[in-house]
Amino acid sequence: MKESLWSKFSEMISTDDKENKSSLANGILLFFTLVTVFVIPICPIQYLEFLFTCSVTGIVVFSVLSLKQNHKFMRSFAVFSLMVIWSSYFVDTTFFRLGFRFINFFFFLYLVFSLIKQISSISTVTFKVIVDSVTGYLLLGFAFSLIVTAISLTIPGAYSTSINGDLETKIIEPIQNNIYYTFMTFTTTGYGDIVPVHPLSKSLSVLIGVSGQLYVAIIISMLVGKYASDKKAE
Image 1 (cartoon, helix red, strand yellow):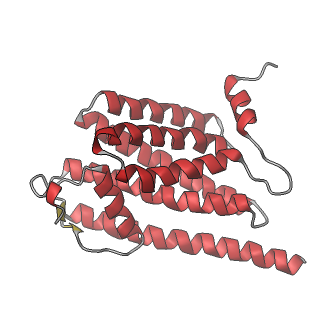
Image 2 (tube, one colour):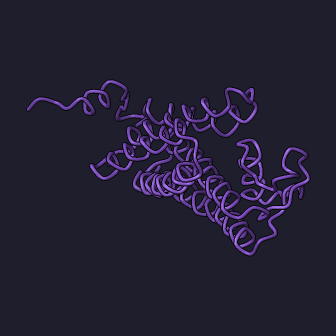
């Protein structure tokens, strides 16, 4: 049977081997995630939206390729997410902006759970497991930043901010601000320059903070357990 274009592409970028079980797709996924979270927010404002859209596209494409079980539902969800992402870029309306945030929030949430499941299925701690763990942590925080933006768009004044650019609208729409606020909450740092004041934004901040701590606790317990099992087997 003739291979599909997707199968050929997956095979082309895959570098799995039986010893370290690492994959180029997982590395590229981490790269796009790091760029989205740390590099895109400091890019010039005139290129910000385009670069952000491209980096999120890279995350969606390589997230599917990095999973062992990239079944039909995952691929279909990814294609739908890409359509919404680029529709939001070319048709700059509140409807598409909200659709982009909500749909991709659920996509990234599903991806994080898939990565955790993939990590738990591997018996030993490998470099691939470490990469997947870091990627999952960053993607979970980034996913919450999409919901923060959605709430800020639908409920003006949900966040009180001392950042000068947002004093008039009270909307945390700029990419720099929503990613910054989310990760400060996710890591329970909380500098206080952006504060949730609406009941919904307050409830979300609690969920973000608890989720960040739970993720670290779950992943560390998994990694320690696998490492201890390896040492015991030796």
